[in-house]
Length: 208
Image 1 (cartoon, rainbow, N blue to C red):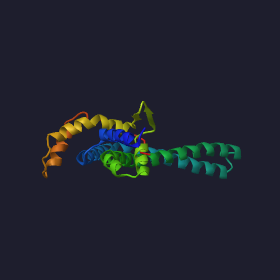
Image 2: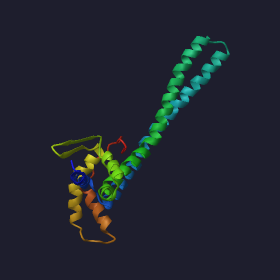
Image 3: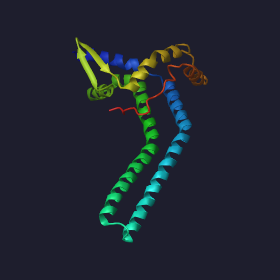
Image 4: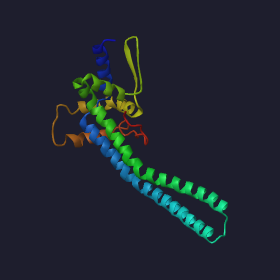
């Protein structure tokens, strides 16, 4: 396939996921609000995990005392210590994951929205290497059949693609309106759409 033909098809895909900056801002505001609402649940989870961790640490300390006093054999000490240490390591990983998962999730979401907002314009200005990078970010399953490019988008970009017609329809009501209240009006319209309020995957895969 000629480079120009392929380029036009890639631009068409990028146009299908393109979002305006106002929607990008609104979507991230919504995700951050959801994060705040869910923070109490995460706090309770962390408290339970820390209690379990402290309990295991106390058991390890008691086990060391038992061995020091000669109340258990070396083999019994080693066997029980392996089990307790494994449990302690597991809880440490859970605590770390609980604390970092949401921040990482928000970062990945921000990257997808950045890509959707900027990729089409960036593609038109990019070098050949830059265009390859943008194309690789569209998904891992890229095929050409009968001179037609087929792309299986990552789920977050697929959700953005599904929402794109609704976003464009909402914006068409405001163009060429420009005012300090434009974002507020758009945000209200976004919030009224069940399509745009669809939940975001809590474990999206990062852009490559």
